[in-house]
Image (cartoon, rainbow over all chains, first blue to last red; front, side):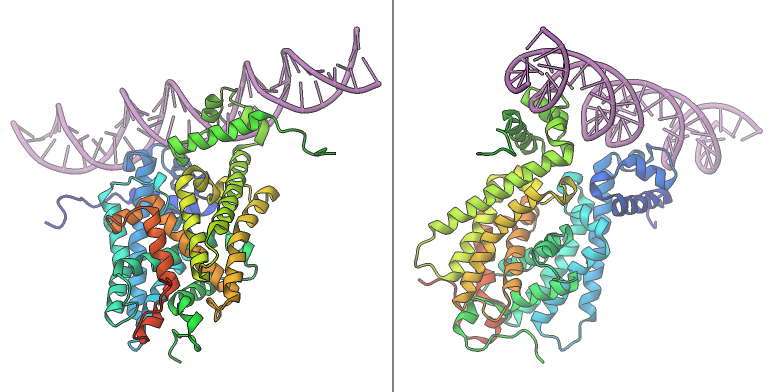
Length: 217
Length: 217
DNA sequence: CCCGCCGGCTTGACAGTGTCAAGCTAGCCG
DNA sequence: CGGCTAGCTTGACACTGTCAAGCCGGCGGG
């Protein structure tokens, strides 16, 4: 009874998703068409429609795949952080991982947060998205249990951290950051800057003589 | 010599931009077409092309208009803050204004940050965008001069604040926030939550007995 | 053995799209 | 009065997403 419900998925499905990712990466999300994807995969113009129903169906499947690899990537990043890392560092590592993912898989990231391309109520997409977010949320809950950000609700912490990295990488992708902060550098630099600023706290410094620092060394 | 370079712009231009905004608001950014905009404005299918060159030309003009009203709105919000407000409050007010703008003008906001719809090197768009960002940046520089966030560069502060509010409102618009934080409330509530969390500082609390607070009362 | 069926994919058609090219018309200047 | 130009229309074309029907090879039951 390995998988009576899902017989081995036809390889064409995966080939189409791969072709879609490549096409988005080359032409850009605004100029991609189902027919071009089909051409790239070497099949008929309607093959995507056959497998995914319609346009949104294909992009939904692609986004779900994106959320799954994001979850995997963040999980791996978390596992690789040294055991003696501070809670702030652990959360920051996850944030940097989030932003690096967006750089390494621009086509996936472009689709994942474009609601008009997605079936909002697709259960597979919802599950994939939840699993990715769960990695972040679990880490924040664990960090808060050690005192980090303990004066805020878990909701407020997760919301703010996620918003910051998501906003930063979104603006970076558009080239907006490079326009307003010339020479600001790569995503890595941007990521470290925002995570450090967020972690250190702003208002607290106005009254303190020494800044509360994030790094141990 | 009032305006020898720009003769009074034909009213149809404005009518088309208005029709475009309405159309985006109703059908959504993904389903809007030049022909539908022309129909709504009661003109021929090629009138938009005549005035704006092509699809991106129209959306670029619309985005520029959006950045101008955003700049105006943030300027007004800044002028309305009480004279005895703390620097942190002044910056937070601007952030909340940014997010409220996105709620009140969803169609404009949708176009403003969608690079594949815009002519990246349009000077009018660049100027409008810079003026909006300038309001935020000036406020942050002024706040930092009083000690707020003084251990960070102006770049780091502006980048982090902007990223946070931009990310929060982006995620909110997609409905993602309501999915993961059910009952989190309106943009206003989200905005106050992230600005307060950002202002208070996280890591600082791990070592301090009392939280560094943002509010005076 | 053969016949029908069914999943996987193709072919054909259609309305709708963005854009190029040419045409129209009203108002102005000489 | 003749021609020019700005502002808009009309016509055409290639391309898109999607609906409908068709093809075909392998499988199970008689």
